[in-house]
Length: 419
Image (cartoon, rainbow, N blue to C red; front, side, top):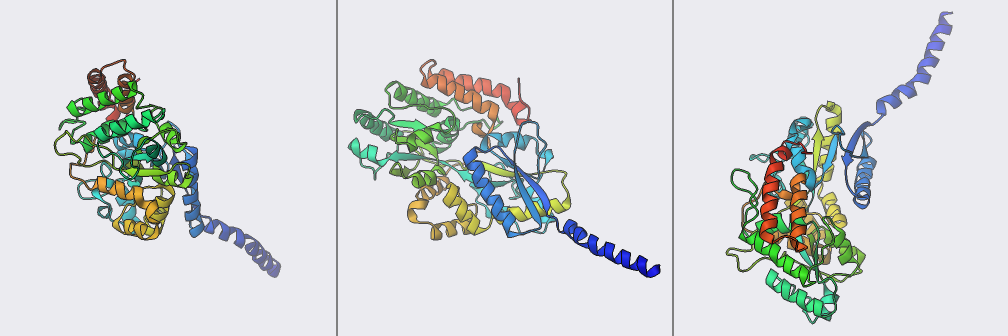
């Protein structure tokens, strides 16, 4: 009887052991939320699949974020959402603490200062990781330039030169000599920084209705009337129009260059964002913006170890090169930049080189950016559209944008949305 009991117990243990081992070996699940479009979402999925295939301890799952969701383990935040997430920092665990507690090597100071603006403290400690950054540049359609009698190897450096080029493109039959994506980002935040103007006062009040911004907005209104400037909307529709060969010039993100090169439908040249040469001290410095990775608070220690492992994975030089090749994004560290320069073809890093030169210019780094504060961005683009459509003078439109923006700004910076 006793032998039977022992044998039964042994059999039961033998049968249960594989199940117990399977439970012990089950990977820890970590969610990564995002709001990317379909194409960029697929690219993110491939990065996550690569991480999952390299180790068995953690299983990352990509989920789409919706309004009202509690923060996941990892949260990929767009440029437009950044101010909202900064205002709700108590819902997130600072990245540098996650890395320290997981004993993963990490030093936020190794990232270039212009890449970590607004994401860390003065000691270089990062609250979140910048992962997909770019800066606006000028693209030209070389075939359209040749048809207009313009030298495609000498793209316009100033807005005055860009106007002359637009004139010739129009005369050669172009129905879209110039267009732009992301209007608030390009034509307020970066126009201001590149030309030495402010978007806010020292006390944090919006102040982007100065001479430089008014003059620039009025110039684009004139271009619109003359059919030099065609406006396609607030996001990246202009990118697709340019990629299809419809437009002669485009201002958009430096990260677009890899997509344009890959598509090969348009022979594309890339140059620095034009500046106003009649403004003293120009050009200065453009701004690096894009997505950042935030860690949700209140998770388990074992889950944070997985989060830290994924962050270390993202910072590997080889993966940074892949990010640059596939997405055109700025490498985050000098080591990654050197790797990108050595491993990519020169044509593939042309846009990267232009972007880096712009970011190294003189000028103070700006923490307050209207394109990062969604309610303000919407107001700014409404008023820019009114000016470019000719329904409001440029000065009135920007005055209205500043006044309306300052009304919603306090609530926006606290993470609230005014109805």
